[in-house]
Image (cartoon, rainbow, N blue to C red; front, side, top):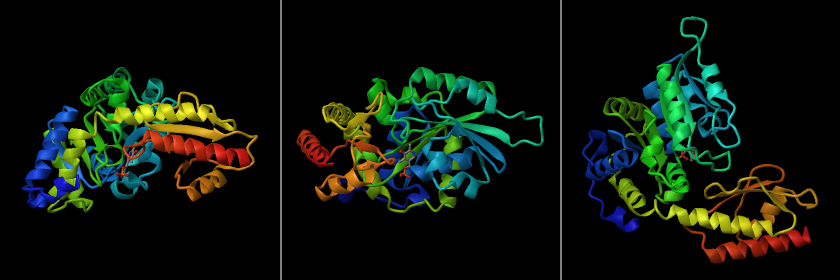
Length: 331
Ligand SMILES: *Cc1c(COP(=O)(O)O)cnc(C)c1O
């Protein structure tokens, strides 16, 4: 990636003439089966640009109460867009109940109410165990959106993990939606960058939103070059991360004092808990792990999330299991 970045042909993308960014946007649109795409610095900006392009002030977005856009994007849609979030419960598998979506759609004839404009899904669903939402389910949400004249956006930050886990092309997961965001960073290993994809008219609006948000970059072909390497070489290998997650989870199962969450791992994330019999809580265990060079995400008093990725080898997995076993024996 660094090699590709060094040799990237660049222009000024604010004027739309950076050839490497254009090539990345073309590739991204093709991967997602959409007409066009726009390169943005982060997934957060990609989602926000989508909200701004789909919605106006006083419009409402139906989304999951565990979704990244609702919980972890600093309330951007409300703060910067005057857009009203309408959270409904995420089920443990990351879905929204179809009947809950329909029940949340406002009566557009009633001037007291905000105007429902957009439905959002997150795939894979990060906080719901990295769960992949199926083509059939996504299609069913698309049918509801169409029936009610709503737009449909997918926060597909980790859509390729879903595609690989389900064994379907990402574009099939994107097909029912009007727009989709995905990240080149994280599992695909690029240093920065996300893409927002949709039809050409929508992407023109999204480009204006990106500019408004300060995301118009100039010789950004340097970043896009890494993104092209990510799309060309990092997608298929996500299956290795998923297999590593299974191997790690199997190792955890044999450690007394740890309880795996049901149905974990779905993709490359392993969620587990310290048992009541263990005297140390999650932050204390994480601190001891850190002393021994192991980083784990603490998600609650006894809850952990481990994320498997490109830089974790089978040897690392064995080493981590060994260190964990050692800490638990003393706990
Ligand atoms: C990481 C992530 C984002 C945001 O991406 P950033 O590039 O960190 O802004 C959005 N949605 C989901 C589901 C994510 O996992």
